[in-house]
Length: 425
Image (tube, rainbow, N blue to C red):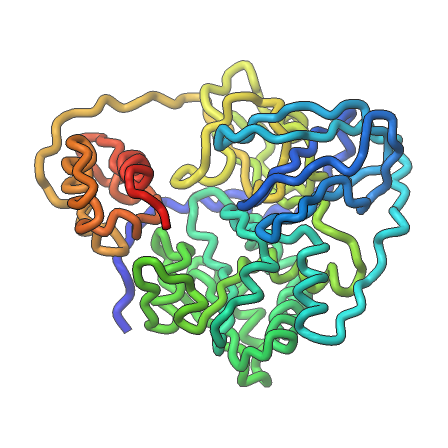
């Protein structure tokens, strides 16, 4: 089957052999009440309250949201206003750890006897897409259409990031357990664990583990970017096309990040909600690149210092990968649920933009066959009908067009701005 277009990157998986290291507790945690897509939570605690590990400290009645839990035991020292990396404002709970790490009485394995109970348990876990998108997992696992295929996204196609790879190498049984758990509870017949070809040891291990299970297919994908994008991985593993305005479930597919899958298995068995995050720390300003496991709410400053980063020489810090990650304005912003990498760069220079030379490179690399240069023209004159005709809403902001542009035009950024011009249903 022909694969969708993409680009070849120097993957720079410098930390792929770095076993995950647990970070010490920080002196203070800042836990935002909005760490996933959907409605922000409201604090369930107040200043002066004592909290325990795994205790729910934020929730909302909104269905499209995920509750928030404490990863430490200690005292609530402040309820503040917090601005997320996306610019939204929400409440945040500040906690000073007591160092005891006393586990909450709330932490008990959930009783799951049917699909409804499973979905309820998934919501209670605080799970969301750990690949970076942050879509609430309980919503994804409760579609309105029949599902016949579960795809576990283990591509991890961004340069530098190896957090999901370490999940595969350190907790393979949890991943297989999570696949079987979701298949059983949702009545899904088949699963595909999709891994890029640059991870041969993981492919070998899982192929052996699934050798006697004809319901789990280990799929080797080409090492190209953006192989892990949802629409791309669906097409490249099943041949199905998720059309404009559709969800993957409309094509009979659910896609779960591999780390999310493993977490669900652990939660069902232990009752411990999402309170920690594995993230890759790398970049040329980092003295000791590694994979760390940090309590959610730990300041990025602590993470970078733990990895011997020379903060005085850092010019840019990116949360996520270099292609789709976000530049963070404040080194004291906290680790959140969607944190999978932290890159510290000391020699970043903004490239000068020049006029489009009509070379067509952006068109040739776009996985979805869009025309970024034409979208750029339509955006400048605010031609909404033309933007619709050019299918700008299909853009997943992978950044491939910007990466290959010889004129250094910010095409992916323009695509996102153009999408905002089109009224949503």
